[in-house]
Length: 232
Image 1: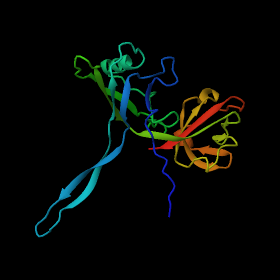
Image 2: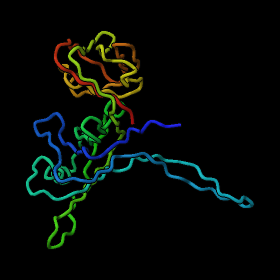
Image 3: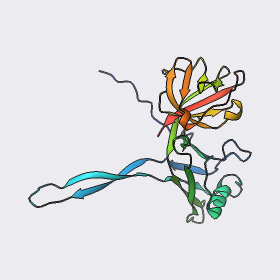
Image 4: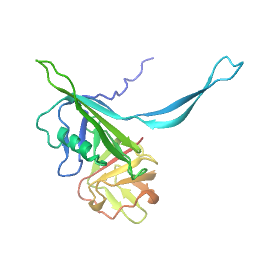
């Protein structure tokens, strides 16, 4: 019996974007290797007399650090140089995105963890020989929850409705990938732009949002609006 080919997550179009949605939005230049954050738990072992095998169980959960590496770039004011700015200022960042491809990305989850930040802990050059290029290693510490956004919809009929805390649009369906308990980012739609919400229910043409996690302001359809949804 033949199986469908898996939809592998190729890395050729990955990127680290700083200052998303700001005047200094930029892709960090020179990078060619990257690792997104992941989840793990510590393991504790318990031994006792007359027991042949120890018992192990999981304890504290951890979010692993983001790492990236590549080649040093001399002039990259909003990329590699800005990473150094973040380190010197020990800055807490909420507008960076780690793109897995041109569409899907990972960033802090401000719906479930409004205080979540990323902090750059390393931007360090390495050794190079006479005929080489100086390498650089980058490390980012996720301070709080993150979300991987892999459901996307762009349309001109998307509207935000304050009454009932809803977002409407013909393309909003469960089949399109929208689910309850996903974090949602709205791009466009007036004052809702780049805010994070939590989906509580999905119906054909309509998302209902969890009011305890944030409420939308009225924004009529007409301009292109993009929705991003995902989970940790």
